[in-house]
Amino acid sequence: MRRLRAVMVKELRQIRRDPFSLLMLLAFPGFMLVLYGFALNFDVRHVRLAVQDRDKSPASRDLVASFVHSTYFDLVATPGAGDDLERLAETGVARAILVIPERFGQEIRTGRGAEVQLLLDGADSTTAATILGYARALVADANARVVGEALARRGRRPEPPLDLAPRVLYNPELQSTQFLLPGLIGLLLMITAVLSTALSVVREKERGTMEQLRVAPLRTLELILGKTFPYLGISLLGTLIVLLTARVLFGVLIRGPHLDLLVVVLLYLFGALGFGLLISTIANNQTFAFQAGLIASLLPALLLSGFIFQIRIMPPWLQAITYVVPNRYFLVVLRGIILKGEGLATYWHEVGALAVYGLVVTALASLRLVRREV
Image 1 (cartoon, rainbow, N blue to C red):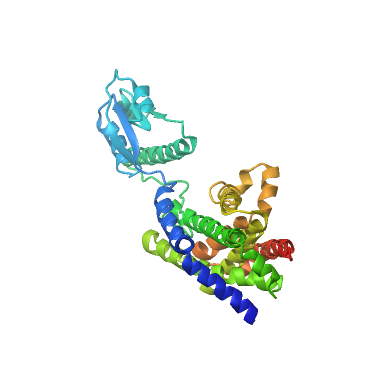
Image 2 (cartoon, rainbow, N blue to C red):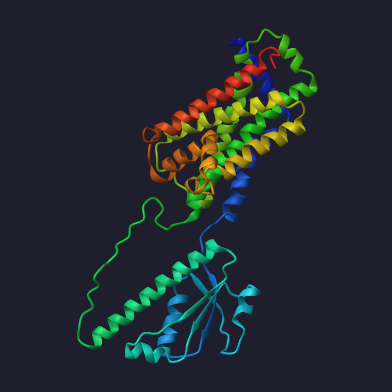
């Protein structure tokens, strides 16, 4: 224990002498969470809408009002009958263009039915599909209103054959931020934890102090734990800062057991720090260690974890690769604890995978540190 404590004290002193590393571990995750938390948002609101109303009847004005008052659309232009509508989309003036033909109100009153046209900017297919869904829902509401009014004029009470009573669980307001922030937390913790331990050992190599550690009466496990524990404690403090930032700025509540959250974060950080040590055994300078650690932690955590892109829609061969990405498992548990209020018992498979990952990368780092031990 004395040898382990000595390595830990040495590492803490080195961290204190290197304020950049401490700043990266504590301030960087919180800063990036604020930056990307506001920047990453998949909610489609306030779509720029242009309306060409060729009828100008009460019925057409009611339809336009239903679009504008829905908060999904903002009326930005009212082009005339001879205006170039595609030009509005090309220049970005409007993302959607609603065209109401002549005699629209009259055809509605006579019950013959009327058509309206919606022109969409399909360059961003995901946003266009969302806008199309909004428009269909608003038109369906308008249809129900027209049918109800027609039946009421005939003295009949409208009885809808089917009534949908939706109830959205875990994220009632359907805010994409609530879904993205847990993934962003996992991404930032992985990057900072990997880089911190990777740079720590490589710094010893560059300064020549690694030779002293080789001849010191230290076991490989004591060296690894002594190098890891200080960064584990600092990373936990950084995790707390990130969670508080998410709570204060974005209203992200931790609905599940806090102890379960601590356990899964410890397992995740243990694997990330071990992976950083493994990278440090390969790199011989801090530049290479930084680049390798950043690429190896950022790209899989961003692209292959389910953070942004769903794993189930990836090709089968790419889905197979995701099984070795720890973020895949961590995000499932983190979202379950934070958003759904579940405990670790529900995610024993993911927790076990994180534990195995941590043991494997730490064992590989130990083998490479064995009295070359590096």
